[in-house]
Image (cartoon, rainbow, N blue to C red):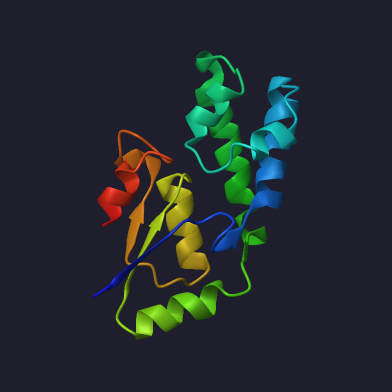
Length: 145
């Protein structure tokens, strides 16, 4: 019998694209990066460092980018919205004794803060810091199970 449901976060339970766009804009302004958000957006769902690598950004400035991006994302966290069905669906499953896991490419701190702020009944979180290989590799899914 199935007793666990695994969810992705962005685009499934939440819409954080407008916040991502603001964060990327700050990165562009502060570090004179000209790569448009549309290129970044195409890669959403894989670990942040992999996105930066695929965009051709030198590894040496990844920590700076992550710092700026995370700071702005946290500042605008209140603008992240739940998808229309997310709250009702997760609580329905929770009330029916399902374990709910979140497998995301967002970092642990922002994920924990968002899950708490949005009052989601998630029982397990899997973020890139917890695995050697991020999505789309199946390791995060295996760990969640």
